[in-house]
Length: 128
Image 1: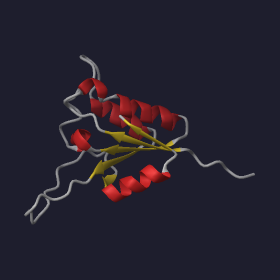
Image 2 (image 1 turned 90 degrees about the horizontal axis):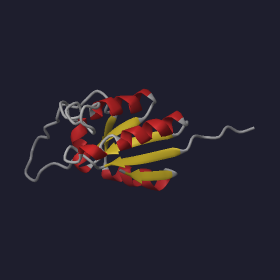
Image 3 (image 1 turned 60 degrees about the vertical axis):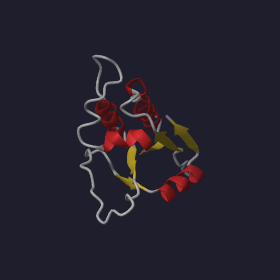
Image 4 (image 1 turned 180 degrees about the vertical axis):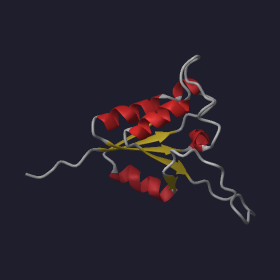
């Protein structure tokens, strides 16, 4: 009997600090899917990339009086979710790339090519 490989789910996280009410959902859904044995990758891009920077995810609250976005990121990580940050291209004329300080929960940077490959290879792709 052959083992069934887990379903792979890619979640493109695009909501950022300007829309706090939308920010917990991608991480919450990733946590739920990981609990159901899916292999989940969260890819922070656009405004959501700010959550990877130290000092941001702990200051954005999806609900007044609720937990910060960092809480939801950590829940997802505890369930084995992979967290990638979109690598920004260098600014024209920039000779050295200044790397921001990232939260410990970020696993790695991802490139546009890697993202395109994941979109084609993963069984499910969500954009939240």
